[in-house]
Image (cartoon, rainbow, N blue to C red; front, side, top):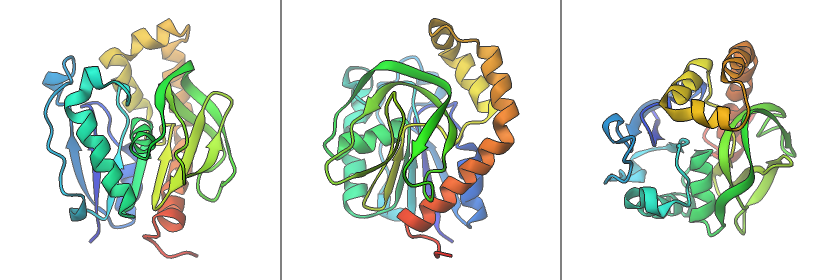
Amino acid sequence: MPTALILAHDPVSPAGPVEDRLRVHGFDIDYRIVVPEESFRSPNVPFVFPDPEAFDLIVPLGAPWGAWDNATIGQWLGPEIDWVRGVVSSGQPLLGICFGGQLVARAMGASVGPAPQSEIGWHTVWSERPDIVPDGPWFQFHYDRFEVPSGAVEIARNPAASQAFTIERTLAVQFHPEITADSLVGWLDWGGWKSVEKAGLDGEVMVAQTRAFEEQSTQRTHALVDNYLREVARLIPTS
């Protein structure tokens, strides 16, 4: 049975339909958390990253901190960037989501930093490779953006930021395919309400909208996972 390492950077970010779809494909899931609940307000904690060769797939998730912010999370940020660089360069499959995608960009030599405009909520993403990243609205919750590394191929974008690129057997995305209404509530309760209100948005409407979109967004996420495993990671047969 293949094994996927799902690396959560905080205690309130489940992998949702991404994890569910990997299980459908027969993956055993090893779920690890970098910053435990008791350290959420002081996230600069030590963490030992596992041997990547113990896994068939690695999935670094998002985080409420910046992938450029060494001052806040440097004790594990630098080591994770080095770790991700080794994974990507070796040709091992990796699916980087939001912060995880930013880590890939930084690890492979591109810049990551605060964006001129944040994206919070459901936003349209234009994909040049809908056979990998389906078109449609994807949920966003980020204040930063990545540049596309040399040697990578950008496959999706919108006017605010690059949204996806491939390199080796890696797919990096800026949006959150793992979102559910329940996980969004968790993000809001752990500090996201202030961010949403600061952006002039209605969090209650955002949760209701996410719940209304959940069936369609889950199907879109399942398609993304299938496409990634087939077209980029080459872990399942082509049709």
